[in-house]
Length: 332
Image 1 (cartoon, helix red, strand yellow):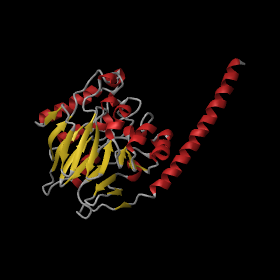
Image 2 (cartoon, helix red, strand yellow):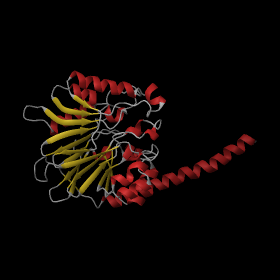
Image 3 (cartoon, one colour):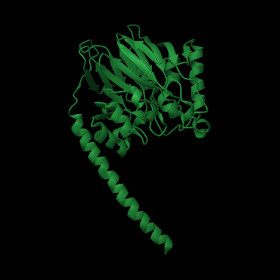
Image 4 (spheres, rainbow, N blue to C red):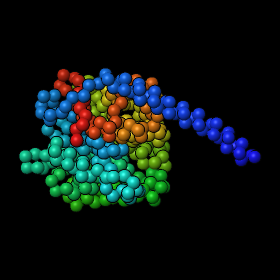
């Protein structure tokens, strides 16, 4: 009898909760669709009509691969999920071939060679750096410099090292760079110039107080600025790992936000969005996997349209010379 009563109580709690979450999700999607109508998407011809200062958000499912382009120069921030994830070899499809094909389509010279001024891994999770080994070893891709923080076991959680083997992922990338004699820079600069873009890098040194908070706490965030327009690439910044609270005031207002941690729980808090005030939000994921409370924050706190790279088949944000950001989807 006691067990039966407990089951009834749990049912009365869980069912209304699930219904509430379902209704919340519907409301946020409806509001998101309403806001999205304020942003028009054009077709990218890769000519100079709208300039060549672009941020390419590739469609690599729920992983990050972001190509910076300015004045004919290219750099790659994160590489997308690779094909040989030691954490879950069969659960997720890798995107090595798709990322490399996109680089050769967009960034290759007349001889078919791709020159990347630099590559940067925001942190050692495989969904951010998993394809770098394949990119580095491709003979048609040349890389000037590689920015990677030294892996710090003190920041990572035990299961990230013992089960996810993120230290091995880091070591394989560094070994591949060494074989090709590519400079590895572990002392990450806080500012860089890249063509017409100015880059401000946050969390270049992981605060000691975040020891044990997990590898997401090592994430490097990048603020990209051209003129008065800005974008923040939030890597896996979350409130739950402490980065949003530490850096939200320092980042300041942005026009475009690449949402942290693919829109999963603990990311894009009300406070963080209120401080950054993005007008457009891009999520490197598919919309159905974004947590309802995060979408709620997008619609109710930021009141901004949000777009998922998976559902849009990749997105380009072009920073024009006359101070606009033009959007393109279906770039693959």
